[in-house]
Image (cartoon, rainbow, N blue to C red; front, side, top):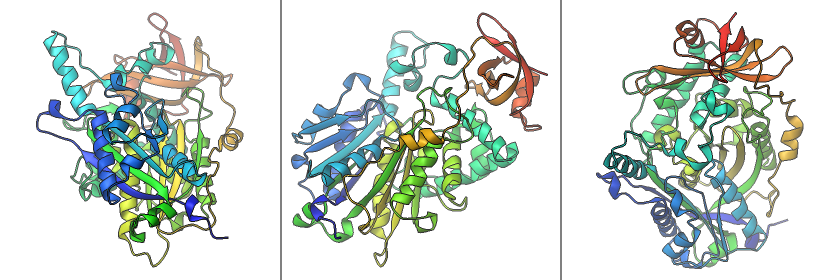
Length: 507
């Protein structure tokens, strides 16, 4: 049966903005970036769409928190009065794909004719202004929008052991994954370097990327004055680059509306089926740290729903806040190491505008699919991840309609992910005694010095607990980081430390 073109969602316009004036304080704020990106998407679609937008959805931003929510300001800025205004509660990395899937469903259900999705982060400008304000007040505090965000100011059990922001937590997946894959430290780092160097190559050829220079695999993973260690085993070039002013947007309408308004078929990109699932918001309530059941369900379900295998994917964007995410994702779908896993350039080189990275990936994927001959179906896979390896949403874009897909479509596969998850260990905050390392990391200062080691351990009863390695314990820091032996699975003892802190000792 041929789908009714009134209910077939297509992307008709995409826009990206890199705002980098010589004086950062002159940059746009997040709302200004969103408006600029929407205007660029409107121009890409031929113009005249924005004032008729009846659904406007925004990715939440954190660089200018006092501006939230931005929906009314952005709607006014584009001259629209949409019936549906929405901003995500948090700037999670899966947000753009969630909003794309919801827009496709609104089109498919006949609830909207023109949907606009946008996001932007102005952390480069916000950080510069915050530093200037602190200096004027005589403070030596170095503002950090990620660590200073309101939802991260709580100091509790996790924070006491150095686990506050994503860069503190994702290495737990990296180190557990490396051990599970049977890799040595050098082999795990080589894989990270290979993936990231290919990202840099894509970014170097992409005028919308923030850093447009190629970096070798060795330089990605080797600590240096310009590539300081952040959280073991990650260096600066392996983590998301949030010090950017970037905005991106895209417009979704029905195939019928696009044709009525004369959009050429060569400009249309079709939205395929999506699949979403998540882990617990508490990263210590995970069944494991070497894989993610919700990630696996999101990816495999999306491929199944769209009737494709990895061999039918022409281009992929596997979310890349930290290497462990594309490493896990590529193992789920069998994505080869020698193929780029990005169309934008990754969150280090393309740019890491907090929750809005995947809007840039959508824009680049649309450009890729438009540019290729339409003598056959061209397919792009978009996998998004947010939180602390928490939220997963995968969707497919195609150059031609997929007759097996109709909208609206249910994309929540949480029940399937929950069924696939193993038992979650009970958390024991007071444990003292023998234990084994489940995973770990070491956090570094700005001069490359170890600040604290964090061990996630399992007790003999199978409970999970945390322990610290103090910088003065140089032998233990070396054991965790020198690659001479695999720390994961090794035995030790948790002993009482200063205050409520518990410390790790090697057996």
